[in-house]
Length: 152
Image 1 (cartoon, rainbow, N blue to C red):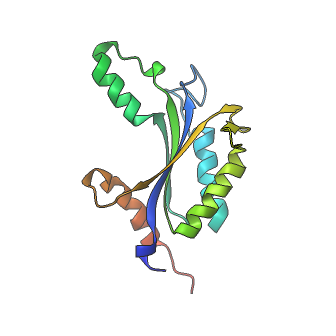
Image 2 (cartoon, rainbow, N blue to C red):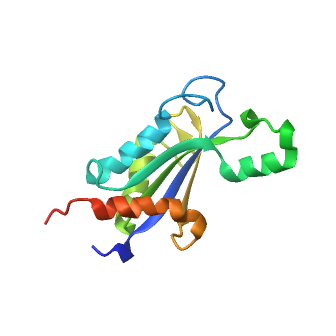
């Protein structure tokens, strides 16, 4: 398969305001359960570590940046919504399969209610341009794909 057919995509599952304690807290340790579920979804469609992926958890970046600029020292991170993100380097077919798998694994209905989370979530999907210098971080996903042993 040609690398031209692959693209970096990022899923973002918005969880609302951070929990005061536990895995949804900003100072929590370990991988957030939703981030872990997103990663497991990627492994489930092509096998363990066959789709290069990266998970993260934290404030919704655009909202966080605005809040910091608008309120400066009065900024309170606990008032900014959080999200779990999954970045993947996939083909269109793999992306379609991954969307369905994530919906199934998180138990998301058309109104955004997630059985796994126990409340309504927002789910976003955006293409990541590797041409933009600010997205150079995602180049590691391409490197992971190229470093995989081939199975001919």
